[in-house]
Length: 131
Image (cartoon, rainbow, N blue to C red; front, side, top):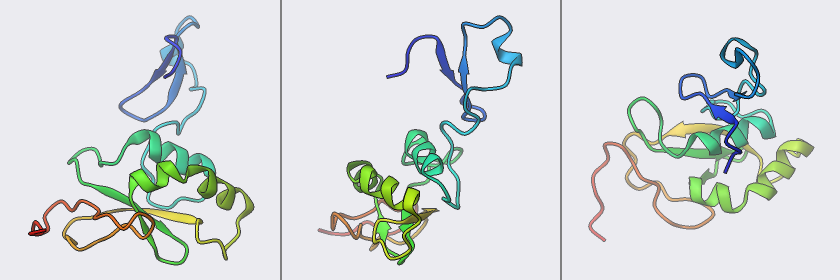
C-alpha cells in the first residue's frame, strides 16, 4: 500500500507526490510506475506490469508473461517468483529460465497453461474447457 501522499495516475501509470504545490504540473516521481509494456527489458518494466494488473486496459483482456525460452507465466506465478525474475532481469542471464522478456494477451488459446504452476491461463475468447 502506498502512502496517502503518493498518487498513481490511471491515465499514464505515473507516480506523483501530491505534497508539492502544483504537483499535477510537475514531473512524476516515476513515469512508468504502473503500466503494461509489451517488451520487458528491465526489472522496472516487469514491476510496472505487475502493478498494472493481470488484465489489459481498455478491454480487460487477460495477460501473461513470456520468458526468453518461450515459456508462459501467469500473473500469479510471476508474482510468486518475482524475486527470481527480477534477479534474471538484473543479470541479463539469457540462460535463465526466469528471464521474462514480454507481456502478451491471451485472446483465444483456451489450452494455454502456465509453465510454472501448471494452471490454465485465462483466455478472452477461447472456448471454455469442460474439466
